Length: 227
Length: 306
Image (cartoon, rainbow over all chains, first blue to last red; front, side, top):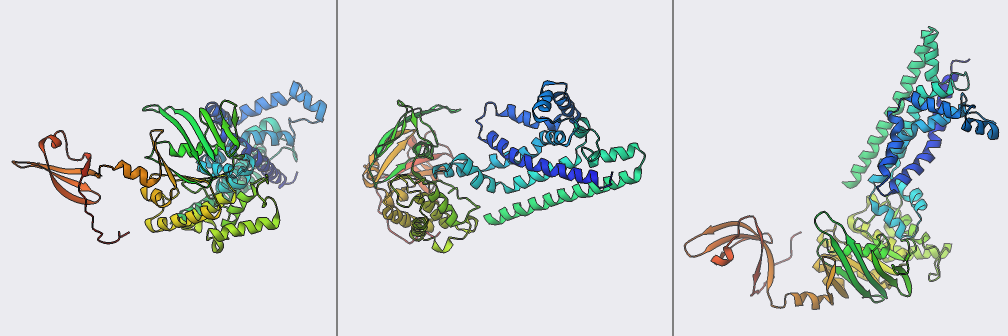
């Protein structure tokens, strides 16, 4: 196993998770933002569940559900010849599920803070809800989109519990950087653990710094507009 | 011809509010909905645009039914051809002035009436004519965030007009403008409405808006129409007894042997008046009262400094 493999795997997982969640997060937050009260708090709780839940709990349930012994697992195996347990695809699925709040929360906040007249103006101009979303609402919440993506990316890079439960520790398939660190420590190989940890620390720190500066610039830009 | 006859009940913390109005607007008429805030003016406008649904009633524009509770017809805002100018203008910050207008032209889905629908060259000419009419030619490639209040308002007008609306709806469009731009925009709006032969309903609580522009005005109070007619007829009738009624804040009350002296704040001026015992009864400083004067011989002393 090469030294860089787990790091590349982490980045691959993070990029794919962010891409999938970008689309999914927009749809979910759009749906939630246009919900009339009532069941909205319920959905918000469901969305935010992964924030509070120990990653191992989610990992455990996914492991049970997708196990080839169970109905869902059997179904996948039979019709798609694929397994979600201990595979990269399974890892990606779990990762998407686990990162939903990191993408949806910033987007939802962005959408609900927009003046309602933007949406209404677009509808009186004859545009459908979807066209309004793409051409008016999403461009208006660009900072939220950026922070959602970066949060999701950084969080996926660091995820350990869910990966351990559903992905296991298969080199080149599911052994991401956070798992590799654990491995090296277990093998008393502290030098490599140091390298991995330092690279991860620097990388995530950089990502968050970029986010911070990007946000500051956009808010400063907004302030100047109103002057 | 626009026919509106709608009812709606609003539940409120303090008391329920009933909106119950019935009126018509002729083609090319410039109609004003006038009243205090909370009279239901904006709600009526939003109901016509389909942004709010009445409990019952009917809204018909020309021969097209937009809303009819008995026949369960309720067109979506997209299907009603309205040009809505919002109080905050609701311009799209990510688009240039021209793109804001173009957005509305795309949305006309090419149904019948307009010869500009969907045709590249015609569309360009149409947009150019709107930019010209609203004086936005030079600003076409600017973003809304770089515009002044008056310019933003022009964009809002232009965008709404670009939809080729059957009804042009304006919700307090002048409320955030200073006096000078307001006077200018009055003229421009009137001109635009004439140029594009629009049937217009404008919501305001400002007397000068009404007097300068309205063909007819509907006076609303607490969700009901209390009067309708030409502005001069309605508002002069209101002060038929030639009384000028002014709002005054009592700053101080003092007494001497013969009378009560009230120090009042009226329109930025502090004045003292003597008041009879019966009038003074129960009044206290800090209260806002209405005072009336039967004689009034005004002299013009200059222009207001703004």
